[in-house]
Image 1 (spheres, rainbow, N blue to C red):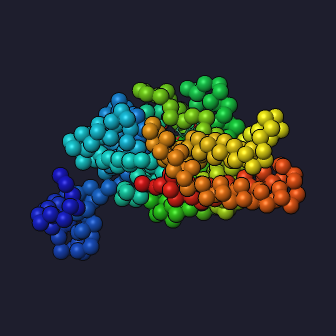
Image 2: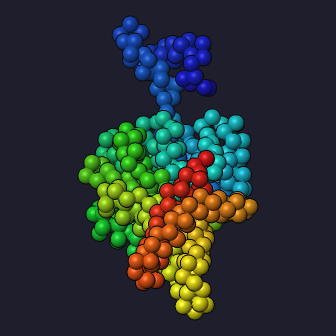
Length: 406
Ligand code: GDD
Ligand code: MN
C-alpha cells in the first residue's frame, strides 16, 4: 500500500492504523497524544528504515537476484533499494524500471553522459530518505545477510558508520586472484599510513551509514573515482564512530568487474587530494599530469624536427605544439575526462574543437617561444616556455568547450 503520498484517504488510513495500534496495545485512544498517534501511524504504515544504494553498470542479470535476496533478508524491515545506473549499454536501467513498476521498494536513477562509482553512490544516497543508508555492489559479492546486523548497530547508536570488512577476523577476500589481492593490500596500507585511517578495510565497497552523518560530509566528497568509503572515512576523520563487521567477499554472479588499471590513478588522486586538504582536485592533478607528458612530447618532437630533420625553429616549434596538442587531447579524453569520454565520431569533432579553441593558445605558444628564442637562442628553453603557455590555455578552454558537462 502506498504510504505518505498525500492522497486524500491518507489521513483516514492513518486513523485506522492508529486505531488498530491502540487496540493492539490495549490502550484507550484518549491516553495517546496526537503526536504519538501520528508516530504510531507512520510506524504502522512503515516509515522507511533503510535505503540500499546499488551502483550499476552492465549488471542486468544481477538485478532481480539481488532484489529477491534483499527482500528475503530484510523481511520485517521497511526498506527500499535505489539502483543508480550510468545508462548501461546492456539496459540494466530497463530491467530496474520493470522491477520498480511491479514493486515500489525498487527505484531507478538513470544517469546519462556520466560515469563513476563514487558519484553514483552519492547521488543515490542523496535521492533516498531513510535514516540509514547502505551501499553495496550489484553482483552479490557483498553479503547482504549482514545488513540487518549493520542496521541494528546504527539504530542502537553503537556506530555511525558500519563497514563490511574483508580484513578482520572472520572476513576474507578469498575470491580475489593474487594480483588483485596484492593491489588491494598495497592500497590499504598506503591509505592507512598516509591518511592515518584506522579502518582495516577502507577500500570496502560495502557499508552502512547514518543519513545525517553522510549529509554533513557530502559536500566534501569526491564524485570522481570509486573509493567512496575511504573518502568518507578520511573526510569524517575523528568525527565518525566506525564499527567493522567481517564478511566474506564472494565471487561475482554475472558479468565482469568494472575496475580497470585506471582505478590506481583515481586512488592516488584521492590520496593527494585528502593529504592536501582538498587544495588540489583530482581533475586538476590529472590535467597537470597530462600537461607534463605533453611537454615531454612537445620537446621530443621539437628536438627531432629541429635537430634531426633540419626544419627551421619556427616550423619545429609548430610541429611540436600540434603533436603535443593531439596527445594532450587523447590523454585527457582517456584519463582526465574518462567519465565524460568522447567516443566514436565525437572524438574527431572533439579533436577539431580542441584544435580550434587552442589555436589562440598555439599562437601565444609560438609567439612566446619566438620572443624567448629571439632574446636567447636556447631551443629547449624557448620551446618549454611556449609549450607551457599553450598548455595552460588548453586546460582552461578544454573544460569549457570540449568536455562540456551535459
Ligand atoms: N553507476 C555506476 N557507474 N556503477 C558502477 C560504475 C560506474 O561507473 N562502475 C562500477 N559500477 C558498479 C558495478 O556495476 C558494481 O555493481 C559496483 O559498482 C562495483 O563494481 P565492480 O565492477 O563489481 O567492482 P569490483 O567487485 O571489482 O570491486 C569491489 O571491490 C572493491 C575493493 O577491492 C567493489 O566493491 C568496490 O566498490 C571495492 O572498492
Ligand atoms: Mn563487484
